[in-house]
Image 1: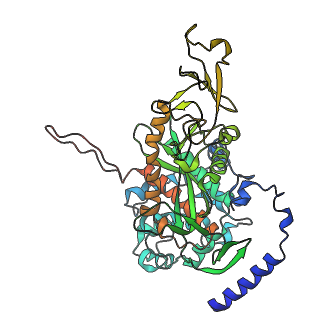
Image 2 (image 1 turned 60 degrees about the vertical axis):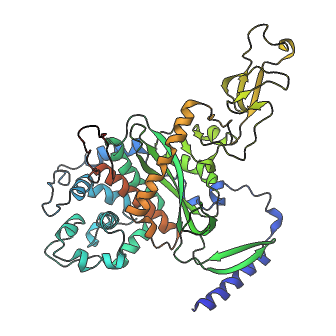
Length: 478
């Protein structure tokens, strides 16, 4: 079909749906937030292992084998790259196969195993993120003279056997969310065992846009006075992006919302898990689903630092997940009555001039008590000596911004942008040909895994440079 005929057909179908839709029950819908924002397939489900279950699974996986040849293997001489050597030794092919194999999988009926396709995906992201899959699956990168690449993905060196790019495409398309999460937890298990993080970490949440490759609308319709565009990828949509000088104010595609772990002593941050949604939804809608998914994987979260888009203005995130969210005070937030700024002072009423003392939090808001000495206040006999200030997105968040610890967390929040720079620029996530939401989920999960592997390998860290005399000592990292 031509593009014009496709547009006409789509418009006819959409108009028929709109004309026959019953709007009388719209207000009575009780739909979970995950379904409203189109991430119902990214919720925790049965069969997804958490970190503790994964540790037990790895420990007992080879217990039934008399000999574990895979764990006794020596480094292959053909793999000379230090980074690939580290990753090759870390991967357990049998476990990877068990985690991502499709239903009805039979190894004897396959020339290429799932773990080999998985290794190919890792190799492409690590070494060749800028090229297409069609070019990657060619003699230029997997010919018989490319012994390192063939050995890494376990292709025989004495034959011309290769993997076609369509087979790699079908492999990515066949991975479901449960398989992706289980293989991600496998690498998170190794990451937490590494020396990249200390015992105490701060978690952060941020987002970044992933524009769609084809961004023209197939059709445009009016629903209750609002213009709605249907794109060739029906899961994506048009949303606003942060002000950037070299880019449009609007973006058509997706936004990736990522939970990161920040090492407070070094400031380095590492991506842990992401949720992908259409670009037209507000960032705050993804905070609870992201936290609940991370907790289902066994990630221990106490405090999250984020930007103003993720405010817990009503305390619902704290009540439902037990996680404190600290974000800069919104410029649009108004100070409550009888509250002065710079420095922040809370008074009991219009007549009181004595600042109240912060006592703590209640389910209703921030609790303040009278700090006056006996006989100091003229209204002592008629004063309730207690005041509760409602939660907001200003100074009175569930994690109040006037605490010194909150300010430290807000200062370190900028480090959350580092994983996006690595994932989009170094690992090539920005160059992904976005065609569907499922494809973006698979690609972003694999990119997260590669980022963690590169950080664990540590081969791209620049060494500390020392200078004589009065020159300062400094260190830079890759």
